[in-house]
Length: 308
Length: 249
Image (cartoon, rainbow over all chains, first blue to last red; front, side):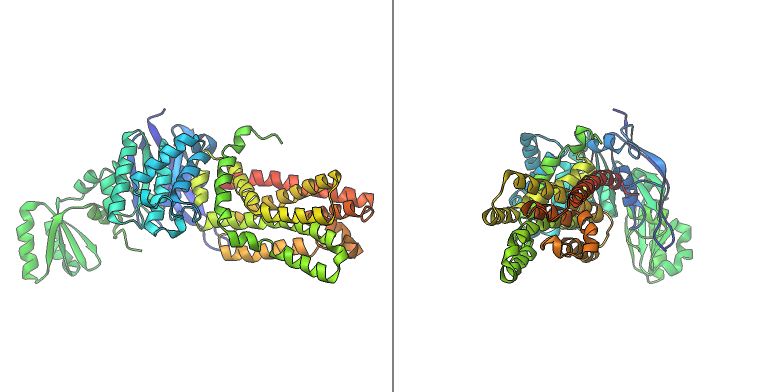
């Protein structure tokens, strides 16, 4: 099997709407996902993450460009690719009139697994997702988070070589999110490859071996979370409330990024006390913490991931 | 057109899941027979002699409305649940996905229709020829209607629009032409239209089997050819369409 689970070259997608202007959702995205990796596409709503994921998962034709999955052409030969992939759709819901147990089992059977294998894998996935207690309850009676966990369980039960997860933990509580992360880590240890989209920075940082920051249909940066944080010019972040108006005054300390009225200054530890003195003299409140992916995102994109 | 066997991989398993989903909709299954039941009551009260025609028409109408169920279900799981993405990005083929929904709906909704078949057997009695003709025409109508329903389901992005169009389409072509009433009562100049529309073609062929001579030999040929062409043509088109729309443009 080729070492690249996914290779995309110059993928473009333009949506043409009747009577409206054409919308370019992807403007030449290229990326590679190596076998066994967990890679995150990080971006704001509308950045193009889902469009790319759907093209890679054989569900959408690009306007131009190429995508291969384990060496098979995902655009021209989708039948060769589909047995090797599984997808958690964005905002997908299980059949309301199936129980989680029925949902996972019947999906595995439709993929061609034997009854015994489907049953065993369904039980394992339900257990990993903490759904055993509600496994026989109709999905219509489950909470939003439980339904989302059912969708994730359905897909992780396949152990497909390449899994696409579009915002897999949306609507989940922190404990459930961590269960998903742990299951995804276990899957890659067993040889699967994972490409996920998220706009949760902590998820991208905790889960991905590498990540791509996507904005307006383009890849802005690619790297590990650590390398992206190192690349922004400081190991500490000082957030100065209402400091945006004094950005010039703080610029000499290091890189400055504004987020609304807050100013984030990225500095190295030796200059911390000096900067805090300036903030105190200006009667501003400052908080100090390690640099996070949020600063790397702000630096790359120019605005917060939650900003519409 | 010969389709490779793997094209239908996963159909049985997916249709079993789909049937299980549909069977939870007890009220929907009950309501699927309301139109037919009301029409039969009217006929019972107003013109009892037409009951055999109306019962066979009710069976054909039921098979036709299965397509409306397929339309609603396929659109619902695509628009509301996004489950088409889960199933289509998998070894389940697009053809199996379409057939799974169609067969799943058929299995779930067939029960009440079989009650109508039992009524027809009680009131009319079945000869082997009539039974075979009923089986063939009903199957053709189901094939046409389910295929049409699936194709239409891929064209909408809003469930409310689907409900409106589906109601118009299935009532217009299932109730207005001579499905429940004798073809002889339909305006003569429009008879060819009735004989090429699958529901009325099927119902009128059955009327001719019940009362030989209702249709001329030429009309029998027209209705049979139209029904076979429409059902097989729409089915093959739906298979091609299912594959094409599995990867959106």
